[in-house]
Length: 586
Image 1 (cartoon, rainbow, N blue to C red):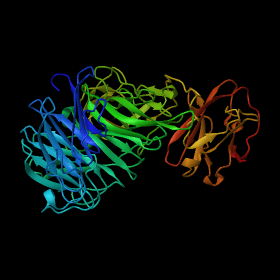
Image 2 (image 1 turned 45 degrees about the vertical axis):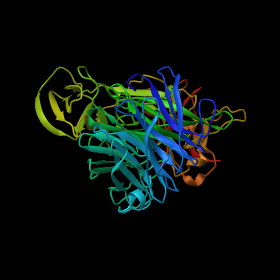
Image 3 (image 1 turned 30 degrees about the vertical axis):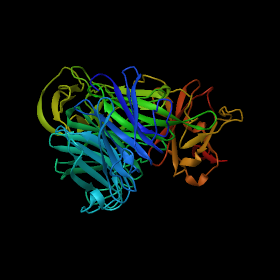
């Protein structure tokens, strides 16, 4: 609040310790804390059945508005039904109850969001299955709907409306007031009604209504698997941040690390996507809340699941700091550096391979200096597995093909480098030959470019692979180990690995590169057919022309193009004849 204090809302079954009383089953439990975490007051509200608070906000009069669900029709609840209802309570600064309001029908309701509007009115959203009671006269969309309620300053109903389609909406809904309406986020399984389309299973859903409840625009985000919206917040520049979790690895979700991932995206004022990013490890990770700190800096709160030495899964709270598209987590890191934001992940001797239709995406970085085009690569979400590549634009070695309109051209001879006109601009300069071209990017701040090296070129390596953790948590393949847990080395120039049973979805391919110049050791992409099943695959290293004492990288790819790596070192010169194209069955 304005005094630097905090207020927390939830539910409690207790009537001792920090909880002053209980009116039966679970009650709303509201606690006010000082800036140092000292309890200033603690109060419960409810009836004889289950009551739980999901949202609390400071109001303009210095009090609090709380929203949640109630099964009660006694105690503090004056108008509850026999089933779950939305229940809202208004408190003063000391936690005294000023008024309360139940909204519902004969079926199930659950309110997850309540905000005060600039007019002093209140706006409530949640899930409802009812078509009677307070929702009488409205036509249900089908399944569960998102029910929205506008209340006056004293808790009296102004209007009620339903939003959604034939699937289910309203879970984990959140609302944000704008001058010309209200933006609402939720999850949806619909592809009709107020929902413009479905990417598959549940999607994130963001839509905007005017102050009378009419839909202005509606957008969905997701992939073919389950995408669960949890939170939306306003960002600077009339943009919005959404977070939750995803099981998808397609559509709007560009990568999945395994299990469910935290999925955060930023959209503009009409819901068009600016960027999306997933964060996580091989197990289940969930985003629960997102907030903007300093301009361009965001915090994402969630839970990640970590495999313990005992084999048990440990759920831990996680706070990520996101700058632009940078994410830090306390014990693992998944980063795209602000100055190296290409999304490519493949490199061969004479070409930078892109991940979407041969094009890379580069976001404008800082102004007033030469830019290095490049990308950052992290495997298994561990910082020690970091490798960065970068090269300078040079007319003698690189051609750029822009997907953008040429708006201006004039001579310039001061160097062959990419320059940014101004920070945050959608105008970019690049030099190719003896002319500097001014490019208006579309959309703003993004350059879509196909980059082809016109002659072999070494890439600058800023960090090294380390062997720790590479195949220990390998998703798509396994490396054979001894009984003591160590890896088999290469007697007879052999390296053996096989499919990870959990991820055996198709053929695997492997290549080997020399490190650190990343020279491909063979032009052949060796395929490991799915028919090999659980059998171990032997890679005959003689196929790859090794020299003594050098470092090499084994790259394994699945059919979706996901890659994993192992670094190894040759101990001596190998002199033998290749057998079976480097592949045999054991």
